[in-house]
Length: 212
Image (cartoon, rainbow, N blue to C red; front, side):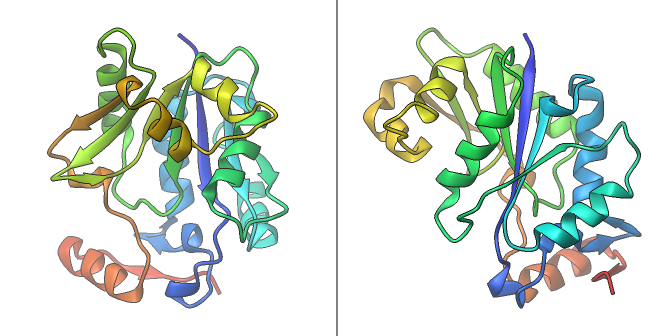
């Protein structure tokens, strides 16, 4: 079953000081490069099998992507209204994905701990879901996280003319949503504030810097 990936990176990063969080370097590699490296063995060979949605900081992030190896590079699309909620960014990513994708994995660009094994585990759980389930959301001690995975039925619904958000679709179809209880803090760890970064670096004893 062909899998497509959408990475959301359109935010302004205001709580982090107005920076492109995915360009934070940990141990010499940006968050974005780390994530793309982990996804590379799981994606298809076409660039539009993995879509990176940009908005704020698009120029800086595109410049960084241009320096990455070709096998890592995603298809970059720009959300012209990144100040809207993430629904518009997700919609832009879904429209740019390859048409033959059968299931979609949605990730955030500021998740520092997600690796290939985490994504594969989520994919395996989605494959083993029960009948009638179209969306899977990881739940870590009651907190929702990413990657969120859904099938072509949901992708079609989110890109149709009425354009519901994923949250609205889930609310309207609770019986079709699996809240996947899992004890893996990687799924809920992201970087929103300087305190989040300080805690991450302290726990892992990582070196870090902002580009420039």
